[in-house]
Image (tube, rainbow, N blue to C red; front, side, top):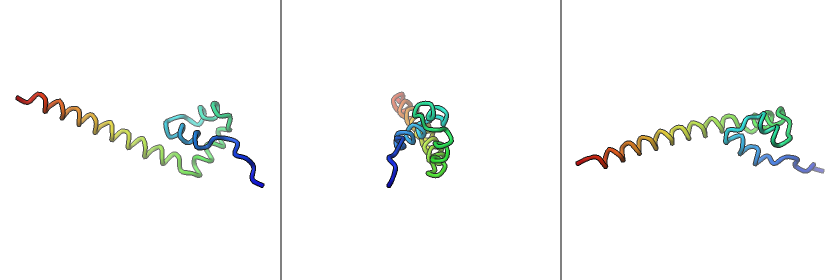
Length: 77
């Protein structure tokens, strides 16, 4: 028989991808920090978070360039 899932791993993963530390996740969820680390490594969360962070940085830079270009067009005679 399969034991019931003890933690909401979908929510834990989402919080991790949003920037929460292992320490904070352990404190908030009651799961052991080592358990969260093991699961994240097994499922590739660190690589996923790095890719998301890179994407967010690119999006931020793109938004800045768009805003600058938009403002430049409004100042033309």
